[in-house]
Length: 363
Image 1: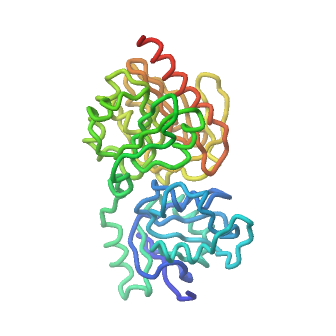
Image 2: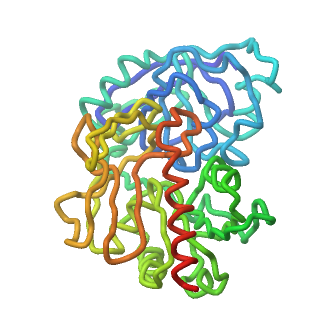
Image 3: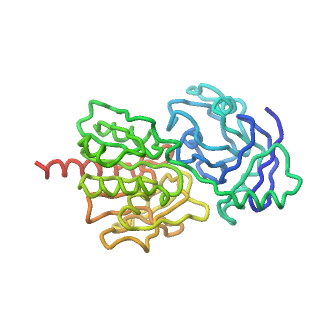
């Protein structure tokens, strides 16, 4: 495209770049992700809905577009900012160029940005609103003030499935995957462990989920402020009270925590990337995890029946909870790790074991 455009931050800073992908202008919250690989998984992760995403790794697009690596059918983010876009990808699995893929998907791209400097700004000042425009406004100070005052949000209901569907119908254990914007890797991880996966929309009432008679329920990742989804939280609590085994991941972890009486808080700039260190509190063992979230559970608000099972090594925030009063556990990170390290994939095995033990106890 080779057209100039400007990235304008709510603090008044501006960055000049070159367009790729789709044309247009956009206003959204800006965030950064530190993954060195997995840009296709980042682009198709529904948790990035409504965000301008900055990729800290300097060269993006070098292995092209590989549909088998997508985490959902299409990108959900608002715009994509990179240092350098690779125009000629080289990979035997590639089916096209990133520029064309984003253009066809309606996603704005901006390259030639000093992403190292931009990331430091976001890290120091915190996540903020930003805009991509063809020209700088005549009154930059007034525009920045207006930008900062805008209430922008991501939305689970914009990324959830429209109707239920089944993955691996011949599986022996039946799991309901509650879709708040789930990554395909979660469904694959369950299917690989012999589960039939019934994916249901975010707004599904608890009674309909229980009527499916599943062996367990997995609460998926997704975008947005968890505290705003009050109807979903009430339904999550009803399912938890039924005694079914529950496993929460990312947003699902936060929703379950709120449902059981805890509160959440917004992080300064979030945890996004495949190199996030966590510590298992029971053993002290460290793991490297894949994460993508801007909110966290406030550990100080956990009820007495909940135990903090994982902690973020970098900032001490809550990364996991085990519940004693209901048959549930949850983690803030992504054990399916698409893309990222596979260190914590064993948690899916724990969930399967919980379902087996619950089924045996019910006999």
